[in-house]
Image (spheres, rainbow, N blue to C red):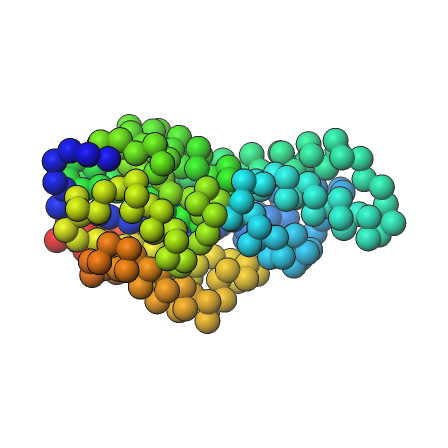
Length: 263
């Protein structure tokens, strides 16, 4: 990225921050319905086994490689079927996993409360949507931003005036890892940034059954992420922890984040 000097870099998390739908999809009643409607429930996947036997054990691989959410679901449900002594046809598992993945992405929308702020920020600062996610999320987030009338591109395709999307699945490591930000630094020309602001829930807003949301992990992730960003850019990082404590907190929290970023 080249061009005129920007006033700063704004880093925004996706799931649990820009998108609550991505989190709400995993609520027990929503998850149960999605498993049923996709056909994964008929193949033996329950809400409990979804988290404990598929998502949590495969998170590291799923969020740092190109394997993708659909394939991990497909492999997980076939592995569980094999453990029960069943030979589940690959096509049936692949189709059901595809329907479930599509439903998850449809639910993972950017909340409308963010749209005015994103439109105000885009001409003023470089915006980076940084996420620990599966491979499918990169193109999905770009499409979500485009639906708001905002130009966006994967970080490695950075160009002036675009909002950038950095996904751990593309970069090979999570946001708390210094290599995530060192790689981004090569794309973003650090001399363009005089300040860095970070708005992130650090996993706090995720579903309790998701091991990513464990309280001790949230605190450690926040500290490590801030340290990694500051080290990469040699610039202090101003942090807004986007922690929701109730369903009515969201609009007020977005308003507070706007004041933090534009104040």
